[in-house]
Length: 373
Image 1 (cartoon, rainbow, N blue to C red):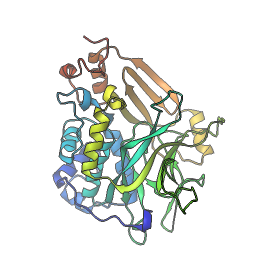
Image 2: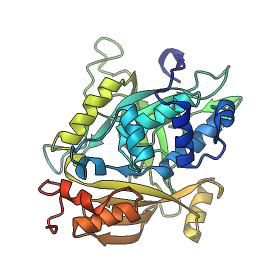
Image 3: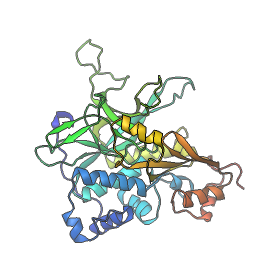
Image 4: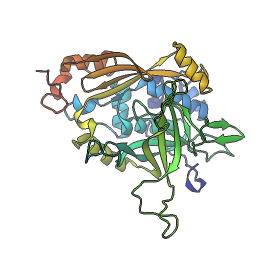
């Protein structure tokens, strides 16, 4: 639930009915196929989960627009995102993925808005130093998909964090209980939800930024817990170890992040040399799989999960490394040595619509492969 039990109001979508129908066809949402089915669509929690999954499967996490186009620009405005992703067959990163998804959700009748977070990143001072917070350079969506009397119960939806990101709606409530989230009509309780493959799980817990200047009482030195730590766990019950169970990926604020905020944050992330997007070609694609290994099924059973959950393996491209993973297992790994080869991988493995001619735009740039001519 949001601070002060606030409600999210309905906001009109930047997309027309025709554009929303084309998006639904693109992701494979067969329930919405014409004006009548669009009008009767129910913006509920079940459909929100279906939309989140289908979007993740349809659109790769993709920075090719930054490296393989003449203007080297990541689109983030509603019109440009629709043209790039739905029409031109590209993916995006968080600002684009969640920007498009927010507009679609609003067009389907959901009450939602965008919020920002600070990502924990390696220290810029020392390679061995502690992780530190970035600026406001991650973008997520907060949604209220339930009717009264639960109309202000809020969920986090994020289709833009990449490999370890959220795949299912997550209740905005303290998830430190150690149990799965409870989403019954008569009981809503925070907890964890499944990630892409057992034992990956996600949760949020109330928290604060260590550098906060605020305190709960004068002289107490205790910061108020006004933010939310989004955390991931890969802790195994089948093969336990001594590593911490949960790791914070980013810390989310409830303040609304507007289009002008997105424009400026995306410009910084894509143009400042210290950000990985600026100097590395990155792409991630998710693919549905079944749990075929006995160890995976046993891990799921130990956590109380069910086989009917949707599980995903991931293709990942980072620079010249291409990897396919199911959970922690590496299923396939290769290295690309030329731009022509990398473009073929982007097209054939990741489903990104690129052409051999796009190689010209990356020549001489920091992200270019050294083996290319």
